[in-house]
Length: 197
Image 1 (cartoon, helix red, strand yellow):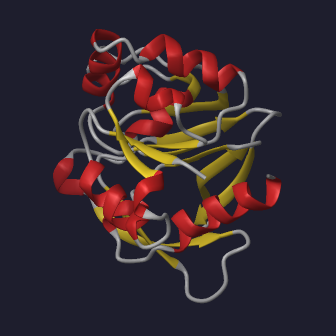
Image 2 (cartoon, helix red, strand yellow):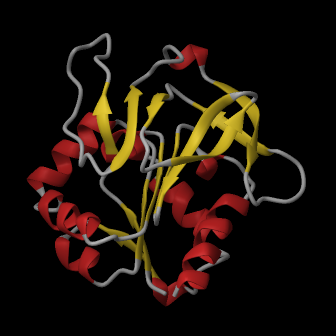
């Protein structure tokens, strides 16, 4: 299975490092062009700055090829900014400069809803299907899931609050699993895809 990490901005090295022990070297690729994207079986959309990532995707000719693949059921794990880009709808944020979204994940989210950088925090996250201790969730200028539509379902919680949703082969989290030393979420996503294949 060939796996890529969108490598335009954000937590790209961290995702590549997390995947490096799970995906054979030749099957793991940083994605910067539509040709890179075309060769993949799954993609990781990293945390970062969602407006910047969207702009770079459009400038680099990646937006429309990815939109087409998403319509065809392309598997994606999106973290923080990546979740924002997949969301069906964004609630207006304080800046009023929200990015465009692909609109494929049936959730309504608000950017930076936990506060500014200084309000970032870590908290235990319970993930459905994951054994052992709670997952160490890293929340940095995180979005908040305000509403989950009928097509999506929760799979991760911080206390009673939903912090991860999935819809078929699309998974999105408000936290950054790539910034922890815990590889279980990356492995769970890939294992689910392998079973589906």
